Figure 1 (tube, rainbow, N blue to C red):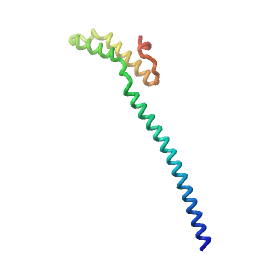
Figure 2 (figure 1 turned 60 degrees about the vertical axis):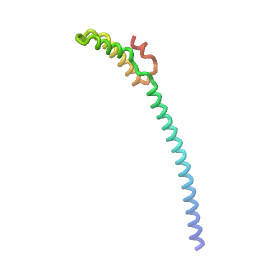
Figure 3 (figure 1 turned 135 degrees about the vertical axis):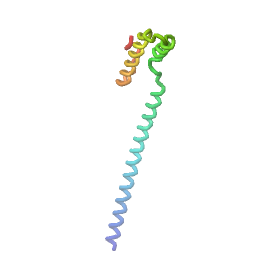
Length: 106
């Protein structure tokens, strides 16, 4: 009976130890997850804060099409300029490069 009681007591101690270790591990993992969540939120917010690229080119192209509804071919140069800008901005976005798009376009 005494031997059985000691075995139960050791099992309980071991169980408490494992429980404590699991709680510590859970806290560590939660800290990591919270850090990753904060990083993700910051990235998401920074994406929305960035200026939309090619606004001038887009506006000029749109204005040309509105000014020349009967002959949209007059807007070819502006459309090509907008296309080049959009492609350069896309390339920069894919690379993660934050250099100015203006220097790469002109």
